[in-house]
Structures are given as C-alpha cells and as structure tokens.
Image (cartoon, rainbow, N blue to C red; front, side):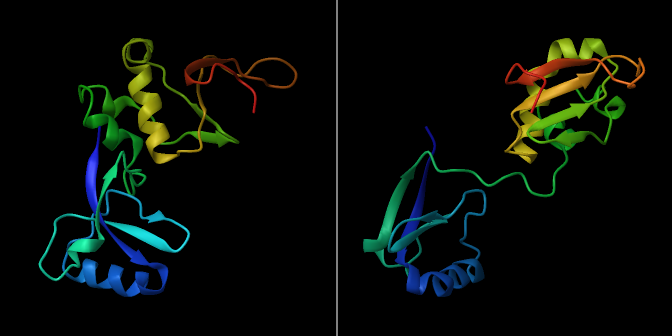
Length: 157
C-alpha cells in the first residue's frame, strides 16, 4: 500500500502554497493534488521547518499522475527485454476507448500482451481495450480482422 505525505490548505491559499512548495522543490509531482470541499491536499516530498505541522496529513493509496512525456515503448523498456522494443510500431489508432496497434511479432504478443496493455493504459487512462491488426484488409468494404490483446474482452466501442 502506497503512503505519502501532503499538506492540507484552504482553497483560497492553494495557489500561493503550491508556488511556494514548487519553489522549494518539495512538490511531489508523481501524485495528483486531492480536492475536497473547502481544502486541497498537496503531495510533498518531505516535511520542512517552514510548513505548518498541523496541516501535514498522510495520504493512503494516492492517485498517481499519468506518465507525461513518455511513449509506451519507453514505459515497456523498464519492464521487458529491450530486444523487442525496436521492432514495435511507434504509432497506433485510437477509436473511442479502444487502441488498435499493428504488431507482427506473435511471440512478443504471447509473452508480453499484459505489459503492452498496461503501458498503453498508463499513457491513455481512458483506454479500456487493446486490439492488434491480425491480417490484411479484405472484402468489398476492406475490413480488417482484429485480435484482442488486453483490457475488456470486446471489439466494439
């Protein structure tokens, strides 16, 4: 279970406090700010002498920020053997809450489909389904067969 510390301040003083904490390089940007009715809780790295100790709170299971500026390949590099990474496509399609990607390496998909799904969901939290293009276009309407890789087991939005 993740635990971090934060400082609870009234919304009226929020911007001022955030600026001060960032200036001191004490803002914990890995986690989201928590909003309550009258207050906000700002995640901090450490307790410093200039902070009001009465306003320090412990946050259980804080919500993490989305992985900003990273690609799914960079996230995957942290988890799997890098020999596969160079052969993965850089682009994919997003249709509603579905990502459609074109990965030809079936061995990679068999072994790392959950890692792939998780890395794509870190970048696009709204995604519920990850599909792979499995064959070339065919038929009058040039449709394409898709295979489920991860997420909810469906192929329609």
